[in-house]
Length: 182
Image (tube, rainbow, N blue to C red; front, side, top):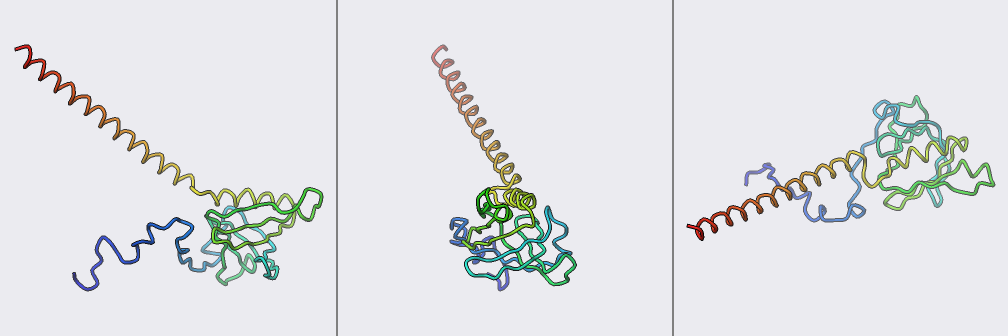
């Protein structure tokens, strides 16, 4: 093999491809600036605290694809950090008796990190929760459609194979009846 030549299989795949998704290492995500993230699906200030002992910080949050990007302010030039939402659990915190608790919710990532978030109102908290839950699905809408398309193709292949088997049987039956009748 030539030095530097990459074949079909690389050493980076291997047994990692056989791991369950929750066991695979997180892909490296380079910090993005707010300009790179853009407006996102939802945006606004949130108070965020990593549990169990992180300090609460007020951050400008932007929900973009399957990540909650965190910035110091909406006009910052510094790259932001993110909370991965793929397969995360997003839940309300507290009871309906306390108006303060209706603004709180938690995000638990698939790696087990838990963040406490606080919105400025219960309406904002509900908006964030609904929006984030759209990004935590085990499969995105596109992934579901791709899987459905593959299943349809497999179903069509299976139907075609059954029809071919039936045609072979009919040909065989026709040949045997010609031999027997002639």
